[in-house]
Length: 234
Ligand code: UDP
Image (cartoon, rainbow, N blue to C red; front, side, top):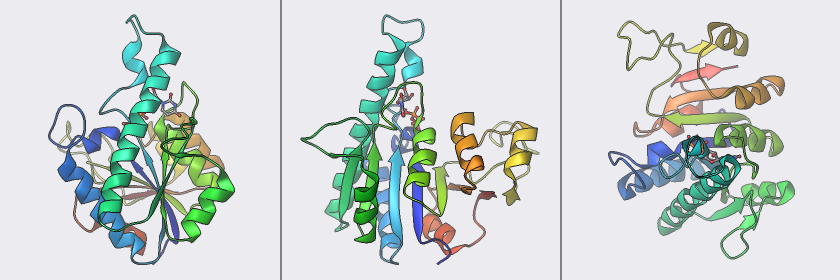
């Protein structure tokens, strides 16, 4: 296996499957099985989940809800997703721990780096909920930051597109996919891999990102094994 410790970023939207809102149990099971395949190979897996399928802080702009309040609502949404994935993983026999950026003693542990690493070493999937616990950030930033903190080898960004393209492949038929691309080139071409805060954190800390299609069966394991799946940003 090419990577020993990974941080998998799943967007909230991906968890809604065909639905227009909320969680699709079918997708949860599918993702849990994908993660299990990787854990069975002795790979250490941390997961950061988004909340866009339930709530995004940006939705509050122009509404009666204050932005900072909205961002905390978004963070709580990520915890709902994280709890759902945790349960689904445990149902199929995968040991897990949920760590949150916002203290919530009854349901999860607070994020403590050394503890997170210990859980990983014991083969538990560590799910990081509530982003980094501060408003005005995204879960992409949480993924970059936590990955750096726990010294992950790579951030794996699971999406429904199978990599980074010259243009949006859902809009432009002639868009071409990159197998590899440097941080510099992503920046120069103005491509959208992650938001700038998240992207810069990875770049400054030499943490590679792989964008890949999480919905294709067996893909996560292939990425971890080092097969040319998706796009490597380095
Ligand atoms: N959020 C935040 N700080 C964080 C992570 C998330 O304020 O560190 C809030 C923010 O409002 C964001 C929402 O939580 O819109 C849901 O996260 P995100 O939009 O990143 O989810 P995704 O797009 O991956 O589903």
